Every structure is written in C-alpha cells, then in structure tokens.
Picture 1 (cartoon, one colour):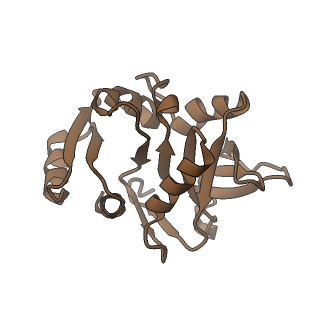
Picture 2: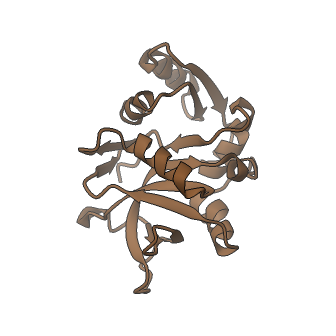
Amino acid sequence: MAFPLFFLERAGLKHLVVNTHHLPSTIESACKKLGNGTYKIDFSFESEILGSGGGLAQARSFLPDGEDLVLVNSDAVFFTPLANPIEKLMQIHRESQAIATLLLTPFAAWQSGFGGVYIDDKKNVRRFSKTNVEDSSLSRFHFTGVIVASESFYKTLEAKPSNILYDDLQPLIDSGARVSCYVDPHMRWFETGNVT
C-alpha cells in the first residue's frame, strides 16, 4: 500500500478511503501509521468481497459530492521516471471529459497471463479482454490498477460483487461512453497480492 500512497500524497491527497475484508484491524493500523496526518482516513469493511466496482459503491457514503476520485489497487508496486503518474492521469482525465481514465503501461513478457486493455489511436479504451483480441485497429496495454473516475460514473455503481472494468465500464463503453487512458511507456509494474 505504501507505493501507491506515496504518489497519492504527492498528488495532494486530502481523503483516503480504504476497503477492508481480511484482517481489517491490521490494515487499519497500517494505514494510520503510513498516513502523514495531513488527510482524513476512512475504512469501508466488506463482509463479502465486492470487487473493484461493488467495493467502490459501498464506500460511496464516505465520498464528497461533486468530485472525481482516484481508485488505486493497494497491492500494486510501480516504478517510473515520471515525477508523478497519478497527477498526469488526473490532468488527462480533466482534459478528456471521460467518465473514467485508466493508467496503462506496455506489456512485459512475464505479464502475458494478465488481461489486456485495448485502445484505439485516439487513446480511447475500447475493450477489456482476458484473451488476445485480433483487431489491427486496437493496441493492447496492461492495466496498472489506477483509475480516475468521474462522479457521474461512480455514483451509478451498485454495492454488489463486480469488476469495475468488465462489469461496469465495458457496458458503458459499448453504449458510447468515453473511457480514456494515459500510457506510461517507461513504467515497470508488479503485483504483490497474488503470488501464484
């Protein structure tokens, strides 16, 4: 959690909401120790794992009205020469007026087992797929677990198990909504939550 928190703090974090399930008191204690005291921390406990979409919906009562939010998988570690990829992502999100903007990076050979995000030449996300998509008009990238979401999108989510990419964003893309992205070509991304 410390790696994404570092970038969030540098981007001006004012309020951190953390979803918990397994060992919630341990997670809460760690977050309080990591927090630098300049922002509020709230915890949203999930008795049932709700996934990235449902978990965000359940935590909605902690979120202020009228603001975009940054959603970050806490088990990701990434290194980049860019001063702050989250600040860059937030800037692109504001400029694009998309319902969501994803932080992406090129695939490394060892990441072949991960699903891909397929974008067009205008940096619009078109598809999410766990298998290779044969479409020469689209390019495949890796999702880093970082999203800037507009209130108009996250307020529509339901507190039930869902994957924010496949279950929530893909149907909206299919109906014409714009989902944008920023591709950091130099980022090195690693997942720490799944050791298999």
